[in-house]
Image (cartoon, rainbow, N blue to C red; front, side, top):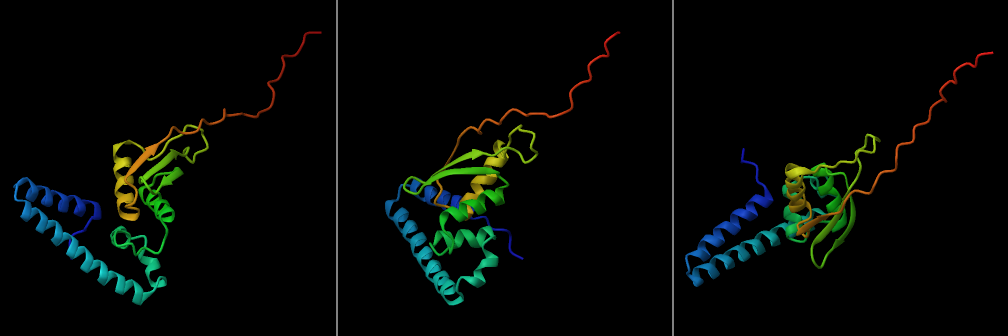
Length: 175
């Protein structure tokens, strides 16, 4: 069984290798390495396009939740879902209950507002923190690599909790 492959980590590794080659100062070697990456991407992309074209969209449906498959399809512009649907998939995969305020396709900026916790307590909350942010970035990298930056706005203020109960009993008056 092959080890798990993470699309974002693989991208980082390729960038690291290209950076190391570039740091060597040999411009020809750097250009050749970048061309090699482009040729391989074109080759694998063409093969995936044939597979997707031959299978059609319906047999792909069960695979669209798989982050590796989704990232390959999105990377090669073969994913059957639009970017907004894939952003929703990424939020669900990361467990981030956020409201999408907008996505600017020209800049890659996704604007989110945390949704309040589902408890109804009005205390707010989301999958925040460094671990939650990392999970969101990884999911977006897989499902919607078009997103290059996430901007979070503050959560909308929650209305005050109105408690309805019976009136307290008035003390009995002395007669």
